[in-house]
Length: 270
Image 1 (tube, one colour):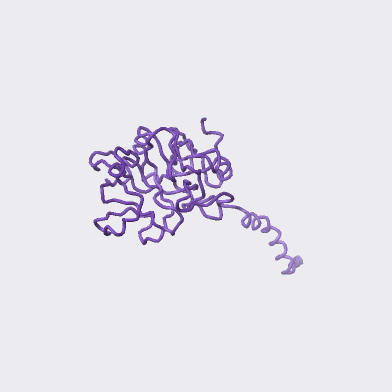
Image 2: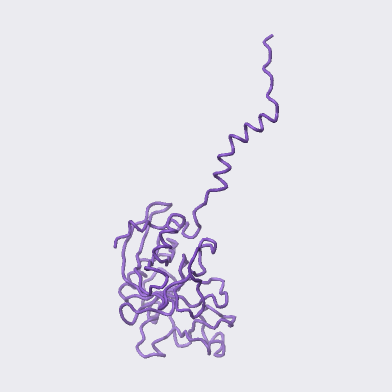
């Protein structure tokens, strides 16, 4: 008979298996999966600024086909943001992804930075007079966004006829600004940026993209633009494309671009 080859001792097989698996295990431990912040999105509204304190920026629109295909730029224009710049907000990005930089607080005059869902569109005109893909709400004299941190309605748009006049009396955010300041166009057309979706007190409230009164006007924490640019943006936005709103200083944009699957800034036309 041909002699049977001796079996390797069990501990030797264990050692061999461990040596083969070690590189794969190490890679699994140290690999950083892409952020969920933009996963599945096929439209991006991207605002970049020079630094944390800049109150002006450029808004660019990007779209892509299904899957993780490359982003295509489809438009760009100037915007104004918070009068004191920007600060990390609460959105779709994880807080441990943020890094350095100020954090958004109520009344700080800064626009939230990060990645955010889009909420409803709003304006003064009846819904029948608009041709938008986003859900739209016509605002009237009783509509307010509650910016009072201790209110149980904080960071919500409410109708005083439903919640009572006392619930809105201390809010400084009437949604019909033209009725409080004659001719004020800012909320004539806009949409909600879903900052602080958990409505955490003092984390910042009532963050919108809206019209400006004059070119380059800074805001209390929103993003402002010309009416023609807003109309083009709203006509393009499609909820089935899972759009995201991104606002970042340029250095933070560059740092997060790979993990958040953003268009490389080198490919953004200046």
